[in-house]
Each structure stands twice: as C-alpha cells, then as structure tokens.
Length: 307
Length: 307
Ligand SMILES: Nc1ncnc2c1ncn2[C@@H]1O[C@H](COP(=O)(O)OP(=O)(O)OP(=O)(O)O)[C@@H](O)[C@H]1O
Ligand SMILES: Nc1ncnc2c1ncn2[C@@H]1O[C@H](COP(=O)(O)OP(=O)(O)OP(=O)(O)O)[C@@H](O)[C@H]1O
Image (cartoon, rainbow over all chains, first blue to last red; front, side, top):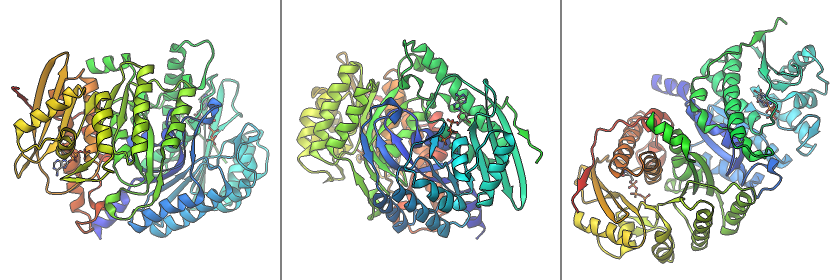
C-alpha cells in the first residue's frame, strides 16, 4: 500500500494528443522533448503526421481520424497502459475527433481520478478562426468543464467567453468566467495588452475557493514563430507539476525558457543570412536549448495581481 | 568541451524511419530521446503508429504504406528540408517500403554526399525470421552496399552472409564479408557465443583500406527486453559521430548506457506487482536514465582484436 501510494505520487506520465511533423517543432515535436527532459514519460498520439507545419504553405502527410484514435485507446486499455498523471491536448482539426477526446478524458479519469487534463483550446489567433466553427461550442460546453489547466490565447479566451478583452480588467474577468465553467487554472499565454515591446501573459487559479492571479511582461521579438504555444503549454504543465501548482514560479520558469529558446532561434535564423525569412529559418532551436529547459534562469519576474 | 565545439560546426540532424508506439520504448520511441539528449535533431518518420509493441500480444494502430512514405519525403523535398547528416532505419515491414528506402538513401546522398546511413537490418532473431523472406535479398543486394554503419544481430549477420557464426573467428569473417559488400562499419550488437553470464558484441571498421575490430563482453541480464536493439543503434550512431568514428570508445559508451538503462529497468520491475510474463514490466526506463545517456560512465572496456 505504502509503495503503491508512493508510486502514484511519483508518476509523471503524460498522454499527449497533438500533431507530429517530421521536420520542425510544433505539436508533439515541440512538447515531447521538453517534457522528457523535465522527467515526464510522454506517450504521444500523433493526430497527424505531416512533413512540416502548414505555415510553409506546402506540406504532405496523413491525418488520424476519430475511429483510429479509438483504436489506439483500445490498445492501451486492453494492456492496462492507460494510467496517466496528465492528459495534454493541442490542435485538433475536427468535431468528431474532439468528441472522442471527451470520451478519452472521462475514461482516463476512471483509471486515475487525479488525472490533470491540460487543454490548449486551439481555435484561432488574431481574430481568425482556423478550425471549423462547430468546434467552439464543444470546447466551451463540454471540454472546458473537464479541463484542469486551460491555455487559450487572447482571441480564444474571447471566443470561449463571448466577451471582448481590451484591457487587464477584461482579461481577469474572462478568466473568472472560465473558472466558473469549471476550470481550475487558466493561462492567457499571450495577449496584446502589453506594449509595442511587450506581450502580456496572465495566469489565474481558483483552487478550494481561493483565487490567485499573476501577470508577466514578456519582451517581444519582432519575429513570428510557430510551435511556441505548444512549447509554452508543455513547459507550464511540467512546472505546475514540479512546483505543486505554484502559479507564479511556473509562469516565471516557463517564460525564462521561452525567452532563451526564442533568442537562440533568432540568432540562428539571422546567421543563416537569407534574404527573406522562410519558416524553415525560424524553426525553434529546441534541442540546442536543453540546458535552459532543464534549468531556466529566471530574470523576468511575474507580478501578483490584487483582485 | 572539445566535443561540444565540434558539434556546433557541422549539422547533426537524423532522419529516423522507424515504428512509433504510444506507450513504451521501441523504434523511434527508443531512439529519439537519446539522440536528442546527445545533441541531434531527430526528424522521425513513423512507419507505424501502434498503441504498444507487438510483444504484448495485443495492439492496435496504423501502418504507413510506401506511397504515404513517399508523400512525406515529397513534402520535405519541396521545402528544402531534406539536408541530413544521418539516415537511420530500423524495423521495416514490407518489400515495397524497403524499396522506397533505397530511393530515399540515393536522394539524401544527392543533397548531402556525406550522409551517413545507419541501417539496422531487422530480419529476425534466434533463428527465426519475422519479416517476409523476400526482404532478405533486398537488404543483402541493395541496402548493405548503400549503408555506412550496419548493426545486425548474429542471426541477421548469418542470413546476410549465408555463413553460420559459431565462434569469434566466424564472426570476424562475417563482418569482413559485409565490408566486402560495401559497408564501412559493421556491429554485431549481440551474439550468443559469449558465456552464460555474458553476451558478446563486436564492431569492425574498414575505412581507407584499414581494418579494425573490437569486442566487448556484456554482463547478461536474465530478463528479455524489447527496444534494446533500437536503443543500441541510436547510441552507437551518436557516439561514432561525436568521436569521429572511434570504434572502441563508441562501443564502450554505448554499452555503458545500455547497462545502466537495463539495470534501472530491472530494479524498477522488482517493485511492480505485475507477472513476469507481461511486456509492461520490462519497458525500458529511458526517461529516467537521462544522466546515464548524457554522461555514460564506462566501466566495461572493449578489447581490440588482432585481425
Ligand atoms: N514574438 C514573440 N516574442 C516574444 N515571445 C513570444 C513571441 N511569440 C511567441 N512568444 C512566446 O510564446 C508564448 C505563446 O504565445 P503564442 O502567441 O505563440 O501562442 P498562443 O497563440 O498564445 O497560444 P496558442 O495559439 O497555442 O493557443 C508566449 O507566452 C511567449 O512566451
Ligand atoms: N538480456 C540482456 N542482457 C544484457 N544486455 C542486453 C540484454 N538484452 C539486450 N541487451 C543489450 O542490448 C543490445 C542489443 O541487443 P539485442 O539482442 O536487444 O538486439 P539485437 O537483436 O542485437 O538487434 P536487432 O534485433 O535490433 O537487430 C546488446 O548489445 C546489449 O547491450
């Protein structure tokens, strides 16, 4: 009994349902290595296998459908391989697949009632939806109540709450609304509420009736990146687990690593010295950032908000 | 430090075509993390996505066919993402897929004529073939001559050379025959003419007309593991690259890591209340062996053979 308890406390095992790209770093390619370096076993279900991310304009590959997802879950289940500490989901492309995810969360919770479900509700960015619009009500009404940690961007938080976010107060209110829908921890991984030079990220927790909110000012790079949201969510998952839900420390460590990875990515991209910036020049330098993933050096501090 | 400097000069980027399992450690799940830890970018093409390895007796999942494989290569090519330092292939299930690999090696060599092709010619083990027998002539007549590093087990070396291997002399002769077919480096990753307590592994290089052979005695664990061949090949690739083809050191470091991973795996299994016949009990403790992968502590030395 003692041993069993100890073991289940120590379990760091994530089922991560995301895209796989052969080349580059988005989805599971972005999330797996950091989680592994931070001590998590990562069981990846690849919802697609593409040659590269779609930002290149041209790509080839295969898509997993909902019944194939069901098959993989059946295989895990039949062998008693379905005990996880965390479930992580990112970009999902269809309604039917998302509905299957609802079943997966329910099932994994029957195996481990302490399962932490970390959901990046990928819907769109900068005012554009890039998934079918039928997926919004499923996220809003069925997924969010099941999620423990939700990491929308500003636009996604707006869609999910139906409220515009124009300032810090709006953002805090949106997070309050998302808590009310049943989600313990909400992180706005990026918002344009900062300044020209800064992005603002916010995190909010409502655990045992206690509310806590922190915000962090992120120096903004002029470059556009892909896969940063997936990396952010993976790092945040890891640090929340390692710090026993210390919101401030987790956000600081996450951002410290993000900044180091992006700095290295920009330097490398520039060193390639191409006339124009192709997406390939700015693929995240993730493997090269192992040390900053393991031991983030926190220089930018988060601030606790009084609310 | 010296090693790190060397690494930053050239590209360290592996295209790894192997199986993916959601749970457990074989194929790309076994090879990717160690290679990444040792500084390699790993672009994984998952030739299958299965819930778990087939040793469990029950599994579910998807198989990539050769035209889907071709699609992925097409996507990489069209975006100029096909410049690799290494190609790594493991278990391949069909003739048509293997024929496609021949095209891929040729193509990747056009892009980078220094490409190192590391081939684990998976055909079978302990006197049993577990791929279609039509694949043997393909490996023998078309793949071996393209590969730089070949890592057969004893049975595979016998099949590929048509000669029985009963002792050290036979093994050395078999490796010579494989060199003659065009392969610079041959490693017999395991053989049974050690002793009851030891496995023997051998490595042989034939570079610029100079032949070198080493042998290492591997303390044998009583348990049966899966994914060890894939891990061995990945580690050996990494160390050969990092030591500029130092056969002896590469073998020693590879075996040092293998031994600690297997020791951890066995120790962990002893605390599990699962019957010994279950594959689940002996899944490699790879993520937990990070330090032993990064800094193998060499205690077992390889011996140089006078050949
Ligand atoms: N241009 C940038 N400058 C600085 N940091 C950035 C930049 N782009 C992304 N980031 C980092 O990536 C994190 C995630 O932001 P990003 O905009 O990529 O994802 P998201 O849109 O918030 O999330 P998702 O699209 O996955 O829902 C930010 O918190 C920030 O740390
Ligand atoms: N029972 C064991 N005891 C000690 N080492 C082992 C054992 N099983 C595997 N290994 C390690 O794994 C390495 C690979 O051996 P293994 O028999 O798993 O693969 P293989 O059959 O040689 O290769 P493949 O099947 O991939 O062609 C060995 O060199 C050894 O280091």
